[in-house]
Image 1: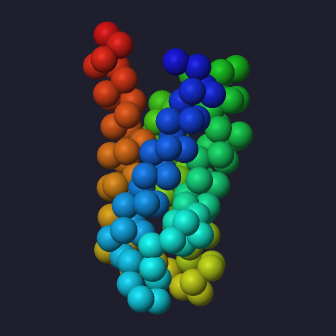
Image 2: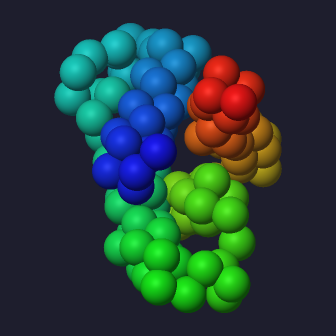
Length: 121
């Protein structure tokens, strides 16, 4: 699979992650809307794009220096997403939010890769 297809699948995975989060936490103050979903998506999607910009694309030149792409994308999405969330909300996210965000994004970002390997091989 080429890196552009992988980027598309990673973006879709993080988009689903943000959608599931918005569905799970919708309330009168935070209704499920496209803009609400987009606001949840952007910080984590920024992490995905930063992973590709600073790690995935350079890894093609020196693959021995980098972790597997899925791990890099997942960790970047979580760290950048939670840092931006913290800045936007004026504090460190609750520990339970960090655990759920880390686990759910891992399942989606690493899961599609595992599924792809099973189907292709």
